[in-house]
Image (cartoon, rainbow, N blue to C red; front, side, top):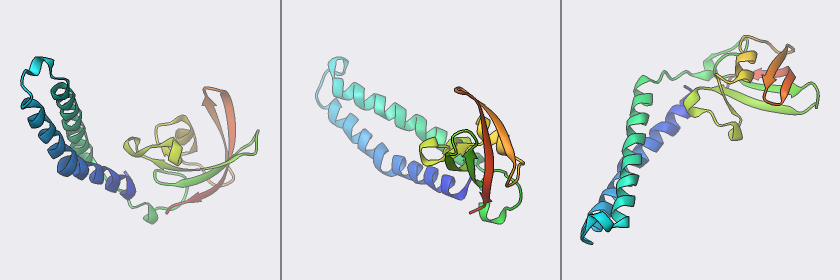
Length: 151
């Protein structure tokens, strides 16, 4: 996991424990004061939210406890975990830049590419100037690697 990914998960965990969890506990207590729990929508909604929060807290604690944080700035060479790679689609000439990250921090909208994705797997071990073939849902795509950075 990258340092940025670790920090983001740690911040989410702190937010859940210090803000969300106490707020939902207050909401449950308040809903209980309204009487009959079997027909109390606020109570059931608060309990459902509490269940979600507790599940997410457990999930984050597990991921964080097993995380191996890699300092990407100390890496170099061919493409590997943490690399920021600029590729060009050989058919459309469209350039894209991705950072190859762990599963928990992947977000394609922010160009954070899951290391287990077909494109990342094709890129691993390659160097600048190499071409890769990737099977995508839209068919076979060819990319040329323009730059590799570790930042």
